[in-house]
Image 1: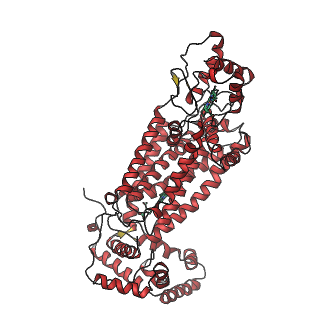
Image 2: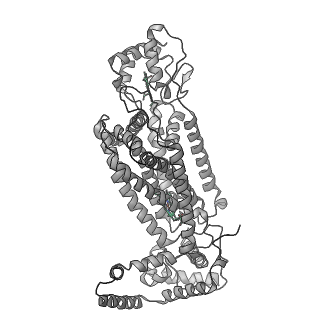
Image 3: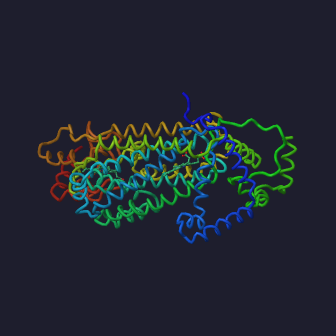
Length: 317
Length: 234
Ligand code: HEM
């Protein structure tokens, strides 16, 4: 099959331009960047705030960040498996949006919860549809997050330098399951009620913290009216808030470190000697000047930094 | 991974990245197609499967078997595999916690520089095994419904208690005669009357030992009927 993303579609001159622009960026030292920045600032100051986008931009460099994100390269061999993470994020966003609409009609009280869901399902315009989106979205999110995890596992993407991103991912996985557990009670029908009681008893059977955790979830030793509002607060405020923050951190690391290439896509090993300047972990080439390369490497090796790179040069020449 | 391997990786990665394509429009394009597929699947699921509402939660009856969402089936089934009540905490909390901790520290356990899945057979084999086990347990959970009928013959005067037991979801966790969960979460009750006096049975119903829910909500009369029935089984 012919890929719609093949390099042939890109006109040769844009490619050249891209390369030039990239090189130019690499060439810029920190002070040059600063100078450019202040020129820009002066320019926008003269406009006197007429240009709102420009005003924000000089203070945040948002367009610079945006361009950098968009024009950053994904490595050779990037394929459809790499869409699973953003698909998970898409579903999370869908859950947030449909959740807001559900929250407009839901009453988190043991006496009214069931009736508010009945009203939402049967009378509110598109009510059942939105409930369906949220309900099935939860299942899809679980499927997608597991597929995404399998992808990063089998591609060895959890290895250096992306260990931390894997750890954040596992926490996101647990939180996603917690969302499923806390959301299940909210419709307050027989099925959700009894399943939650059993889930809570299971929690209570855990060693040491188990009973306390169960008491906290139930808001007391028995299942009560407060249990429902507690689950609701966890489900719509605490856990999603945590998840949004962690997804932010996850994506920050993805942009900073770049996504892996599939492990079987390799470069031919260069014949010539290793370059003396090495790239520190996860630092885009343009920022190399900002990083105390020697310090970082000295920390990791017993031998002084110079010796290490020397021997490296010998070994590969 | 030693330092040398780390540097080699980063250098090769830089080159692979140079050979790659810009995020916009190439990766964005794939992501957007994927968004559309996911959105389409979701909309179709919502339209076709809808969002039905079960009967209202009622602490006084459990005509509904406690059943978690499908993605917790594998945890629920783990409980059935590990039977003795003394080991329940291990199944419910111990094994999942250990698995999660192992998953969390995986990058620090597996420090091998190799990334190609078929060149790291131990990691890949373990992962495939876990995936198969989880799929199998989920399948067990999906197919194992709970009956609402007890075929075991009883004295007609215990009929009322028998009906309540049959309809209160007890069979989701207990086996009685030919019915119910063989090797379920709870102990078999076929001959419970022989080992447990009526007061103790009654106490179990009210207290809800271990992970069993309390059935205090059934009310005095029904609890007594159930206790009478179970005590008659020997
Ligand atoms: C709410 C859940 C999650 C969201 C929204 C999310 C999102 C993303 C996105 C957009 C990427 C970019 C590359 C790609 O799409 O494959 C990514 C990469 C990554 N994710 Fe996730 N993720 C989530 C959960 C997880 C989980 C559960 C794990 C593993 C335990 C994980 C581990 C990783 C790793 C290691 C990478 C780097 C992959 C590479 O560089 O090739 N993530 N994530």
